Image 1 (tube, one colour):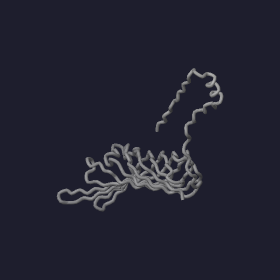
Image 2 (spheres, one colour; image 1 turned 60 degrees about the vertical axis):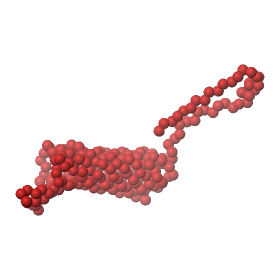
Image 3 (cartoon, one colour; image 1 turned 45 degrees about the vertical axis):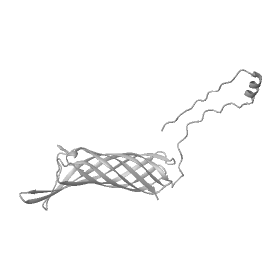
Image 4 (cartoon, one colour; image 1 turned 90 degrees about the vertical axis):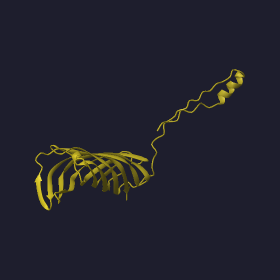
Amino acid sequence: MSLTVAAVFLASGSAFAAEAEGEAAATPAAAPAAAAPAAEPAAEGKESGLEVGARVGYGIPMGNAAEGSKMSDAFNGKIPLWLDVGYRLNRNIYVGGFFQYGIGLMNDDKCKDCSGSVMRFGVNAQYHIMPTQKFDPWVGVGVGYEIATLSSKTTVLGQTFEASSSTKGLEFINLQAGGDYKVSPDFGIGPFLSFSLGQYSSSTVEINGQENSADIEKKAMHQWLILGVRGSFVL
């Protein structure tokens, strides 16, 4: 937004000097320039209570699932469907749990006829910076667990092979930032950004019903960058 400041110029004549002098004496001094408007306050909602939220967005994979295996070899991205449930301790502090199911957008060049998903769950906390204003920016941090699932079907010499894999590991940290525009005192909606850092530690592979599980020896770090929209309601 831009603020336009107008300047007003006054001119005076020289005729009737005495009369002008009298008018000047009777004219009150100009009022000082108005200060910049403060942030617009919102009607005060509940100070504490159960809070539920939902998010949707787009996730960008980065890093490696294991050494020599890029996340982008399987996923071009994901569409996360994210649920938050927790408690607003006061107007500023929220603590709770989260669950996210991500619909995988697959890399058809390297994973043809594949489908996949990414599931995450854990705990997080948020600090709301301006909870009584119409727009309330916030920051958050969390930890959790991640499960990435891939499945494919291939036909070779008339025989169909079905394969699936489930790769699991810790999400060491999840950094978040966003802002809530107060539609009502207890309901807000706005943008958010999330960046998570995790590591897969084990994998289970199933081919035509035969299952094999093992730890990942050459572990690597991977990240998800998620941009989206979040809505939350304090009950």
